[in-house]
Image (tube, rainbow, N blue to C red; front, side):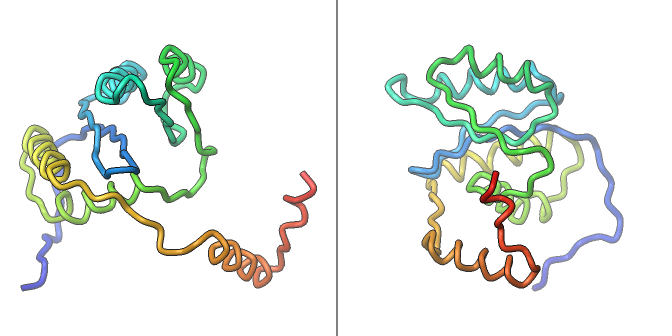
Length: 168
């Protein structure tokens, strides 16, 4: 039977889901918050710090989160084993945690009927716990040369050779 969706959608509220994806084994460290401020991000960093073995460094690839950047940088700097890598503002990027968010959206959010924020939080928590029982890391299907050749072909089609970027 095909998926059914209603023509109307009623939003009952919002939550912020922070997620850290372990690219080696596919596990997720997550935190749900009703607010989206620097303090919630700091709590999430503490959660990561407690969950990852102390012998490992942690590389955080972060989008340009809504917090003021200097505050966020200070929060990361308080964790000496953390190494932050920030994507540029307005960039369109795809990485493994973004793919995982896509699965969450496709498999749970769009298919679910959540009559309250609490119901949504409970469903997301169960989905993450189920994912972590059988985590699956993502693997790249193309090698770097294939990606670079594809990009070079695209740049040729749009009339940009990338020379300007090479000069900088």
